[in-house]
Length: 323
Image 1 (tube, rainbow, N blue to C red):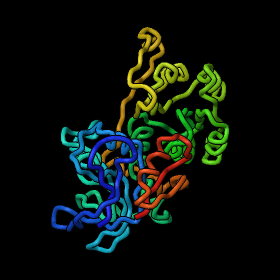
Image 2: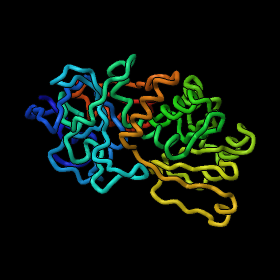
Image 3: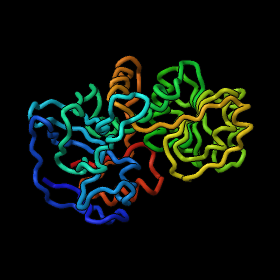
Image 4: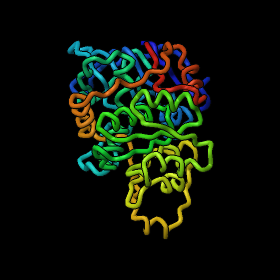
């Protein structure tokens, strides 16, 4: 099979097309012939060596295709070995593409429990783009932050996969959604997905500007960038800050007294469990949710260009590889 192989860690240029042995199914593993594989920021960290992946290695967590044994159209659950505790993953949990060969290939081998029927109505790129950001966002908003119909949500950022998915899911659930961005165009496109408005985060007073849009602060703030102090200042008293990334900063400093007098909750989360994924698929059946936003589709041989584009921050929605 053709696959995008890393023989060393580094920049996008380490992603090289190569021939690899075809994986074969057995009672403990299913093999999926991939129709599309979606990129995630997590893949960039894998490429940089942050997760100690074995070399040579095939990255990629997200994919959709055809089960080679059954012929069924499927999507791949990229959450491996979650464990029995829904509150947090167990010690053997990992994301597909961390240590197991991932989806930047024509075929991928996964546990049979990670093969799920493809949702109706989604194209191959949309189906591939759903699992990681859909599962991560569903767990963050509903399993962890307990977001309810009629509540307000502030999403930091407007253009990434998590941000666009969060706007779509929360708007479908009847929530009032506001985004932040440095781009008026991205704010306008977030409105098309269901956001009521947005604010420019290059304005130092953006938390106050965002608060004015919901009369007193947000019930929930979704922070994937690490701006904890600013995020907390946008919450209403008793609000919840749910954190799932650190793309802008790795450390946060908080004033303790305002935190506890504000009765705030600080909630950490990651990609979710199989139960969360079942909840996401049920949510998609119950609500009118827009499909994942696809920004650009690259060929498998263009994986390095796809990573460079993802890291540029220019896109709106998901970047996808098509084998």
